[in-house]
Image 1 (tube, rainbow, N blue to C red):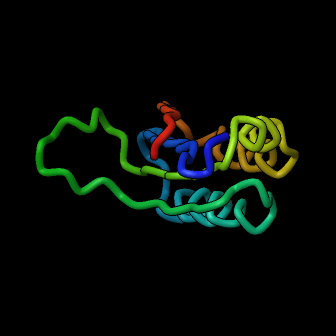
Image 2: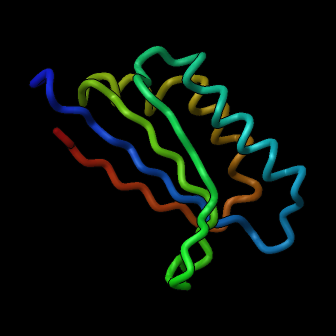
Length: 104
């Protein structure tokens, strides 16, 4: 792929009503550990929604990953550590939204 392009992987979470702060922290920590376990992740950041517009539809957490190629993303998606993270997330997840795009 063009060296000037990066593949962004944006993930938004909405947690089930009643999910405890401890359970949410466990998800945050588990997701944040993935870059140290999956070398295909080139960059990682996350944050909590603080938009004043009221258009978040209950999504509170945004995770932003960067890959160099679709091949690297293809390694990440079925990776055992990614799957293990899904097992932590699953019981408390109400909804998820994922958008991937190329940027220059």
